[in-house]
Length: 267
Image (cartoon, rainbow, N blue to C red; front, side, top):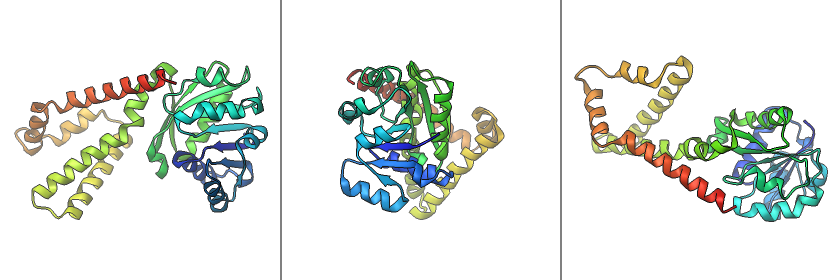
């Protein structure tokens, strides 16, 4: 795969960097840049990689991972544009930035792959969705996928679906944390100590997710297995249905997708 440079190594960039090292990549093949010199030095010391300028990264690396915030992307691409060559692969982690935005500001023929990651990558359980730009071929896609597999799972989607991906998996961890908060609070209301309620809810979540992944069964089937006729689960689910919780979740994710589209339109 050659040399990989992570430009603008914030939380997600550092997550990818540590994942690559854990998966066997050599520190000598990895470069990092950061806006603040002390941040760059810290990453270099902590991981044994080389901290360089954005321009040097673009001149040196085969694959450039752009990890800056969306609002900083135009300035970064303008800075490195003349130093990127058609043989480079550019992987963008910025939410809402279309591949066409980058392609129009980089030399013709540069392969661009857009990625929507999520925060569980911090514990190697990330979900990343990749979309190729016009010049990215199957080999470029596999190269980008290989990078992201170092900290989770990867799917390929058409770029028109990236707003939906943002709404489902990009923002998705927050919805899960929101539900967990409510379940823990319910435990406290019912008289449980908060640490006990927390352990009960977190392990239940982990167990339910593991069941879905390992059994491959539809969640409806798994839910029905827990729901005895006239029992406690049925009583609880009736309340959720009465309060239109399912519809609220769907509406919330539609709102997230609309917001993602609006942000992308302003790029």
